[in-house]
Length: 241
Image (tube, rainbow, N blue to C red; front, side, top):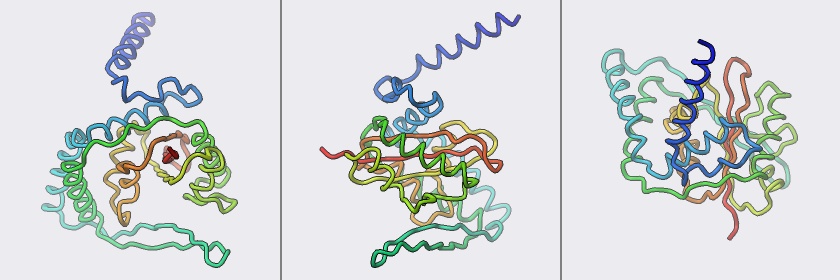
């Protein structure tokens, strides 16, 4: 029985791999990444190659949210915190901006805007993995591990994503970073959908990163379970021509 189950499991994995679109599976040989990290890059490339295809996942969520708001109203009052850092006359200052909203109404608003955006979004450049960016991502993850994942995007040394990415991958010009947490253990698609909806985040910054036409390269890191959430970091870079 054990042999049969093992064989069936292997057969399922082989079938799953056979279904991957090779042109989107740019990280397949990036063995410095874990399999789930390579799969995250594949899922992001799948989104970018045909943004409208993601409507198959978003439209049912939109319908559910419309029904919920119709039945129960706006939801509870909640807020999100946005962390930003500015360099003023050589001195680095950090700020925390608070955005208040009604939870269910805010999610409905985010889903509506996402659905409209995906309908009109043209295909985007497919991203390639970059070892230097991955080193920057792993460096920040190790720093986060030492600080209970409370650092957000600013490292304990004051570094920002662009500082870390350019340090380990000097050819990158513009950069971006997404950090996500979720429980129970999510799939790559779960995380991508979560960051696309991005309710409560002013300007939908995580969505902007996923759908940014500038990026040429990417690294993703699975940070494991911390503070009752499975953590992910996605780092993006635009390489000089």
